[in-house]
Image 1 (cartoon, rainbow, N blue to C red):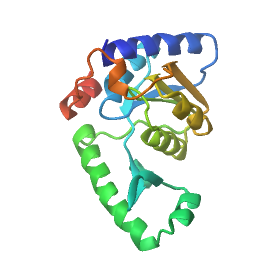
Image 2 (cartoon, rainbow, N blue to C red):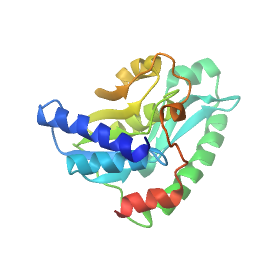
Image 3 (tube, helix red, strand yellow):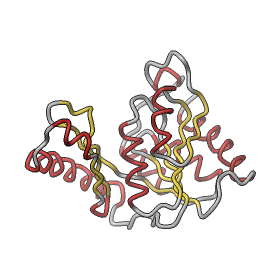
Image 4 (cartoon, one colour):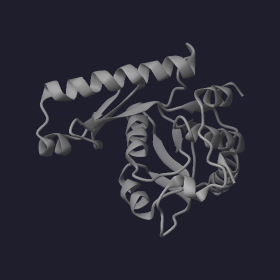
Amino acid sequence: MDRRDAGLLLGERLRELRDSGDIQGDVVVVGLPRGGVPVALQVARALDAPLDVILVRKLGVPYQPELGFGAIGEGGVRVVNPDVVRLARLTDDEMAVVERRERAELERRAGRFRRGREPVDLAGRTVIVVDDGIATGGTARAACQVARAHGASRVVLAVPVGAPETIASLRGDADEIVCLDTPDHFWAIGAWYEDFTQTSDEDVMECLRS
């Protein structure tokens, strides 16, 4: 029906996996702003786990921004794919320009969402990365890589709906993927929701406060 309903359904499935022993360890739930956070809130409640945002920015090739050559996260985390860098023939200066721009945006969002609060520590924990759906998978891949770079012992990617081929391509980035529905004719995440109203910054902050 909407992101809350998606989170309730996803939380129920993850609770079953935890109770059966498929998901173990000290769990923390992180949502991708903005739309993933209302979903993650319900998952965190279902698992009685801490909730946080995972702030990542994909580093896109300058002349083809949808193609990521890496990602950055809070705490100075930087992940680079050397194969893409080599194939795109990127110079250090070109990469630095992209990283400076994306770092500034990441810090802006961190200041707005966190309001001075420290991020939840991910080291040694099972981190469940939640979004409201996956189409191309670039941001989800970056989030998994950043969570692992922050010391997560296990990364679980959890979404209500995703494109089948994209979900399959992400299996090397997460230890486990939980996706409730992978429609054969997937064209947009919002098509699988009755209500896909845009999530605001204020909505994200209210989820974190609650």
